[in-house]
Amino acid sequence: MTITRIPSGAPWEAKVGYCRAVVAAPFVFVSGTVGRNPDTGDLPPDVEGQCANALAIIARALAQAGSDFAHVVRVTYYLSNRSDFEPCWPQLRAAFGDNPPASTVIFADLIDPAMKIEIEVTAVLPSE
Image 1 (cartoon, rainbow, N blue to C red):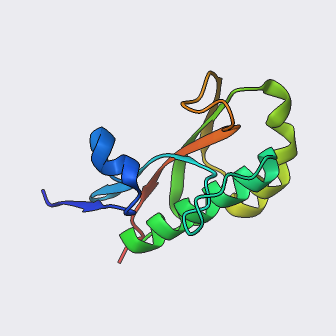
Image 2: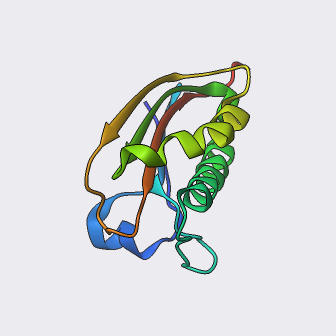
């Protein structure tokens, strides 16, 4: 089996020892992704902004792996505050559209108290 690692270049990957995504066909595993803007390093103060950034980072990783949101089969959401989940629903519906994955929501402390949401997905590669 060939395993392909897809780093994002974020400094945490080398410090912690992980990469943004791993392809182990037919699966694509995308690491837990927070909403820090990958270009500026800024973390929006609101959950909607953080969710949008996290989804954009995940979309980029899926594209690099040869997949997309339509092929996500599992998603796990981590939030520090219960009330922050519902404001994200419109973006999540838009991302997954007619292809909703199985999902789990976990309420927990995130690595930085300013972080409001972390999203982790597992996708499959499209059939040839």
